Image (tube, rainbow, N blue to C red; front, side, top):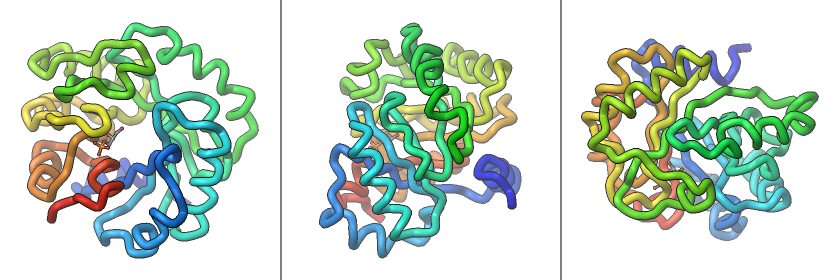
Length: 235
Ligand code: 1GP
């Protein structure tokens, strides 16, 4: 059976676009999500679960619920090691490469090892870049790091490529949940140009037009949280 990562690589190579719904366990309740999960938009290929300030219990309850309702792959997108539960299928092991806080570059990963070592979870090393989305993001607040300004295209590109050279298997360009300004098409295109691993883009995408533009610019997998969470995604 192909791994989660193999499937994403395969999709990227064949230009099949992927879409992940992000569920923040802190904002999750079964009543709020039951209809949505049972009637997911056809384009949805993955469920990501995680947030910046989530407890272990919130994470587990949310993963349990989603796994019982869908056969789509459920991948943890954790803000910290507490959120790791082996009830999911995989985990994006995120290094916050845009920041200079060792806690999110390596410390959390070391602390996560006892949980990850024998867990039945596919671990996907992911280079995570926080870009300025026009408002303060939870990632910036919690990680105490500065996002990279979207005008710094060369720096963004070099940071992504450094991640690839260091062995990351995915690069995730993040404008922050609820961003006013999503990652620009120019940045996506520039990063994609020399990248040979799949590219994830998320933050502030609220409608089909933005989604299509990001795909066209080179995003392989797009993550949407807030717009789905509030039932406000515009087609
Ligand atoms: C956040 O990229 C994701 O980590 C999704 O952002 O909530 O703005 O869709 P939104």
